[in-house]
Amino acid sequence: MNLEDISKAFDLDKVQVYPLDKWTPDLSGDIDIRVTKDGRWFHEGGEVRRKPLLRLFASIVKQEGNEFFLVTPVEKWRIQVEDTPLHVISLIGEPDTGVSAVLSNGQVEPLGGNREITLTKLDENDIPVIATAQGLAARFLRSAYYQLLEMGELTESGFSIRSGQNLITFAL
Image 1 (spheres, rainbow, N blue to C red):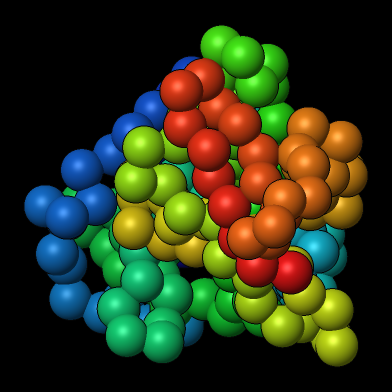
Image 2: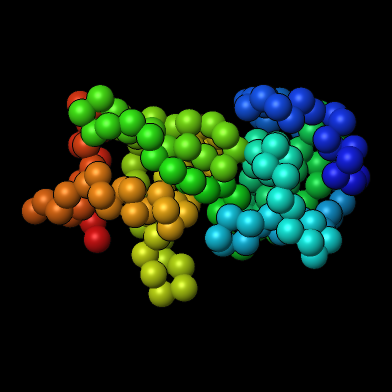
């Protein structure tokens, strides 16, 4: 499996949601792809910089236990993930009308309702993380974290951010 084959198999110009739960091929092996804790993807030691390809990879990541895979209808390749496979790259919207997280796979996840923001420990720092509709954790990159802090407020019960009618609170 090489990057050119992947590029040809998918429409890289569109953000898509793939039916990963229905794609259950046998393990094809390991592929030298690594997702760093700061959201960068490396293939065979070189950083992947093509945004459409990065968005595609992030769209076809599947987690099974503590392992991560790139999955297509006929192939399943194990990859290495240092922290989370998805990342929140920015926040859009306004607290009054609703805030959404833009993910590294191009999808937009509304904050609010049952959506929780949790804190995880990474390199001695607490990092906000959300669970995505894809079933994966997405860690806030630094710029999105600063947006979160700007939109939120410190309350008696912790740090809160308003998203439409919802108030999301997490302890600091």
